[in-house]
Structures are given as structure tokens and as C-alpha cells.
Picture 1 (tube, rainbow, N blue to C red):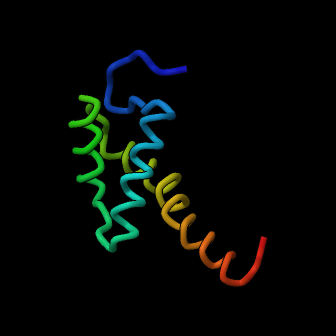
Picture 2: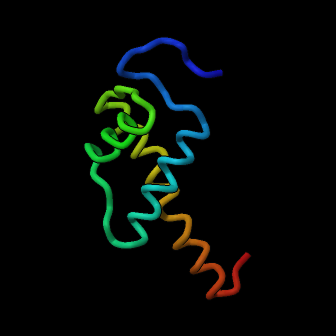
Picture 3: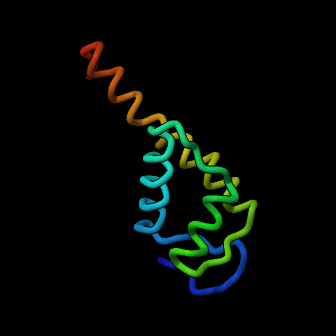
Length: 83
């Protein structure tokens, strides 16, 4: 369920989080990692949400690092024939 309150710790919807992850992955794959400030500004511009710095930090640590490694893990698994 999406939060209706409007404060700095407001979370994104699942779809919005997926968009953020895909954008960060695309930049990361091209060796242009986004800073936490750039992620925060992207969310602000795309969805007019003011999210806190601590939210971006928690989101980055919990989500983006995991998803940023996913393409590399898939590539390694395919190269080594792992399932």
C-alpha cells in the first residue's frame, strides 16, 4: 500500500523503485555511477517527491547495490555455465 503522507521519508511505489533501479543500472553498466544526490534529484524531478538523504542512503545500500551487481552475476553464471 502506498503511503499518502508527504514527508522526507516517503517511500516510492514499487514501479517507481524499479525505474530508479533500472536507471542506476544503466548508468553503472556504462561506468557512470550516479551519486546519492543525483538519485535524489532524479526522484524529485520525475515524481515531484522530496525524499530525504537518509532514505536515499538506505535505498542505495539495500536495493541498488544488489541490483547493480545482478547483470554481472548473470553474465558470470552464463560464462561459467552455472544455473
